[in-house]
Structures are given as C-alpha cells and as structure tokens.
Length: 188
Image (cartoon, rainbow, N blue to C red; front, side):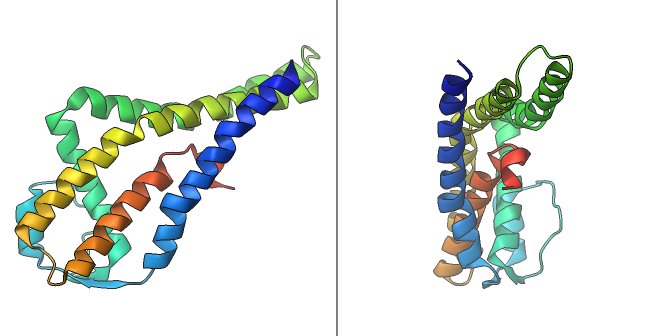
C-alpha cells in the first residue's frame, strides 16, 4: 500500500518539478541580466495604481519588470475577480502549510510506532503532491491575469523596443510558473 501511495505521489511531483524548470527557471536564466528600457509614465498609466514593490528604474533587468508586471496583474485580478484570485491564494497557502504539517504528523506517527518509516515518507510525499496539484490547477487564472496586464502594456507602448516587451512578459509568466509549486519543491 505504501509503495502505491509513493508511486502515485512521485509522478505529479516530478512532473511539476520538470514543468517549473522548463517554463520557469530555464526562461528566467535565459533572461537573467537582460536590460530593458521602459517609459515609466506609460507603464504606470497602463497598470494603474497597483502595489509597487521595488519599483525598477527606467533601465532595469527584464526579470525585475516581469515581477512587477506579475504583481500588478495579480492586484488587478483581485479587484476584477475576487473569488478566483482568492482561490489561487488559498492554494498557495495550502502548499505552504500542508507539507510541513504532514511531515510533523508523520514524524510523530513514526516515533509512536503507529506507521513504518516508508509509510511516513509516502504520507509526506502524498501531501506535497496534493499541494502541488492544487497549485498547478490554479495556475491558469494567474496566467490569464498576466496576459491581460501584458495586453495593457502593449496597448500603452511602455517599452521602446518590442523585444524588451516580450522579454518582460516572458519573465512574468516564468515567475508565475516558479511560484506555483510548494516551497518544499523550490528547495530542490
């Protein structure tokens, strides 16, 4: 029974790790240090009054603009569609809380000799896999929100060069893929 649970748990974890690497980390590594030039007045006009965390200068790396685009798109999504945005945040919090809590329960169960060690490992992996699946299933809404923010940026022509604009949009999408898995998988 533990082997079956372990096998069923490992498959989504490996798939999520590979997807995160392919669509997230690989893209961010390719854009690392790529300078972009932006008209900040047009940027602010396109994205409105979004919370600004670490406002980049007019000349900043694509990854910094991408993270700012993602945060602004999430803020607009929370205003437009509060229920799906809240569900996305709930799945993210679930991914942060459940794997460590299941590990604590599994450790106590092993100490009390209620389950064997392979069972504890299978339970921890199953909880992490469940959190990963919830995070991946809620990713679509965040990607749609980023697409709407990207459309607003394109319409405002905030970037001087179109390839800078594309790099920023790719960085925002890649950051969403990186943030969708539980923190336990981010350590790998």
